[in-house]
Figure 1: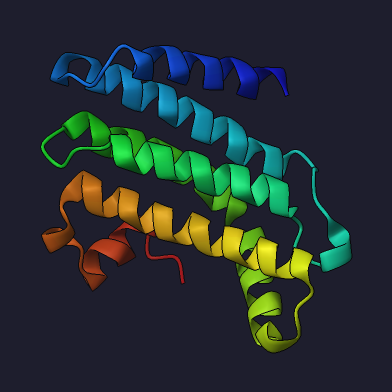
Figure 2 (figure 1 turned 90 degrees about the vertical axis):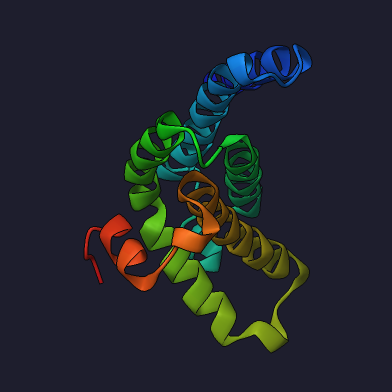
Length: 157
């Protein structure tokens, strides 16, 4: 998609400028935009309903990798990082049904998965891991607790 390509090109330009504290916020904002665009693909109907997960492995890998880049751009000392994560959390909420459905269905049959299902399961795991890594980097891993997770999920169980 054109918006994703444009966001990725902007990320490359900013990352090629080097890592300095002055550029860190611009890089994090560009990676936020890229992650948001990738998450939007999952919500835009690019779903592989054959697996019953509502998301394809390719889209899940795009989301996981963009979340990884975004997470690595965050710094605990930066209040703007937490604001970006909070904004991205709204987009991640839209992905929750695909994550839950995919992880539940594929995890229940993890011993008998085909190669494409294993690929999707790993990508879904990646989305979850990088999302929690982003939270830990934004607030500090020592500050992650059950109450913080509950607040971040807006008490939604």
